[in-house]
Image (cartoon, rainbow, N blue to C red; front, side, top):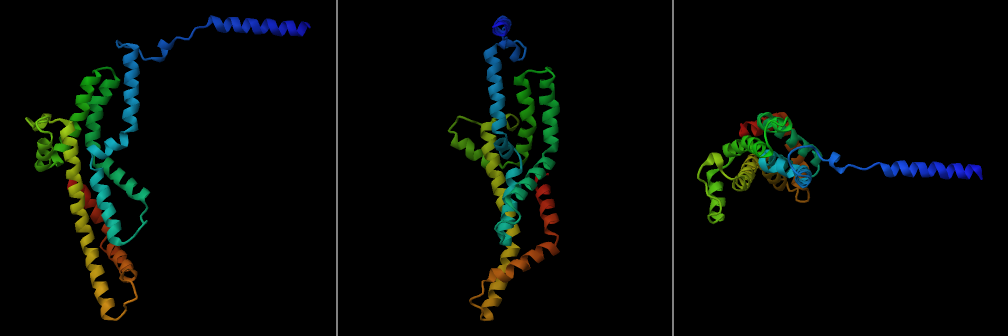
Amino acid sequence: MKRLLVAVLLLALTCASASAQTIDLGSLIPGGGGSATGRIIQLVAILTILSVAPGLLIMVTSFTRFVVALSFLRSGLGLQSSPPNLVMISLSLFMTFYVMAPTFDRAWETGLKPMMDNSITEQEAYGKVTEPFRQFMLAQVRDKDLNLFEDLSKGSFQIKDRATIDLRLLIPAFMISELRRGFEIGFLVVLPFLVIDMIVATLTMSMGMMMLPPSVISLPIKILFFVLIDGWNLLIGSLVRSVN
């Protein structure tokens, strides 16, 4: 009976001390001039940006050009799953980081780092972060593609100054420009392999081997040809130089 009374007493003291403590939700929100609602909206916006970061990487960098050209290479060789998609995407990703390194560094030094140090506001940081990407896209986009989206906007977006062009107009124009260049490079990559396929198909038909698929003979020849000319070095070098 005494043990039960002691246990009840300890439980009551624990509940009393717990009820005396209050949870301050304000401590969970970073300090600053904004209200709690504004801070919560900022956190939601940051999480949203992080969730669409892969899409942003594709939209405003040269990743599209690289991955399209490498996909044409695999199709030209006649290989279905070699190199694997993971290898192709990883190679395109690291090539993008290599090419875009100066742009990323400028965005970090002029925008993100000062904002994290509370030297500039979020609005100023947005302009300083997007400016390096704007200059990169303007150097790669075609005027024809810009004019296309300007006409499609029916006056909503007008190009008064290329230096201050709206990103909602610049990004889609830049993407289709990158797709066009990727297909151009892909055509040049596939063309020699197509010639090999035609030669092998002609030889097999002239020899009366109708039942033998030409790809059985042309595949090792194309792989050997690509290795002998050091194709990876030539292709990657050409892709990087096409951006600079």
